[in-house]
Image (cartoon, rainbow, N blue to C red; front, side):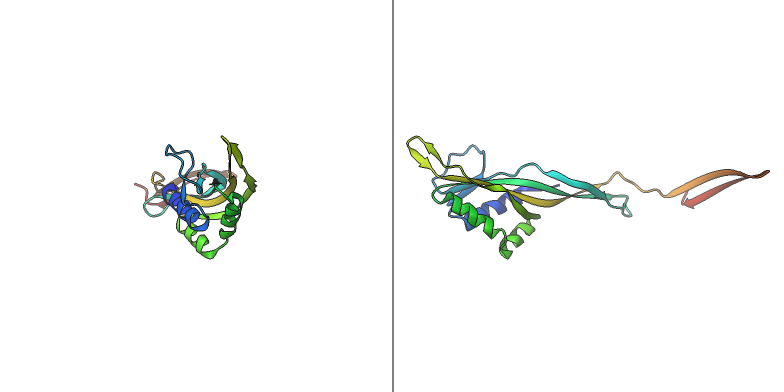
Length: 177
């Protein structure tokens, strides 16, 4: 399972540290809009990449299921130099300190989806400078299946005929109760 709380905390910290945003918050919350400049983000649902791997059961009969997931994070910047702030934020994704911070919460930046869009618009009688971009991230999901159990033994009954000779045999592998 993926815990989004540390991921959201990391985005808040990174946006406030690497843009001119005085405040960063999750998109679509019920709080009043903060003063400019500020940034918002959202974490979308996870998409499975390929097939999951089911690992061999351990001695307790538990099996881990592991698979890659990806998700898109839309990021908006509100305030002067909105485009420049998002361009700068995109470029810092390659810094080792940022890679380490993302790795600490179990995600990795993959690429920009599309391009950075200037979404500036006239609100009342003033222009509200805005920009938005979608960033693709990947992570690994893992869950333990505790209901697998173990096969402790197998019994095979075989009958066969060779020419006129019939033969019957029972083979036991492991512990048969």
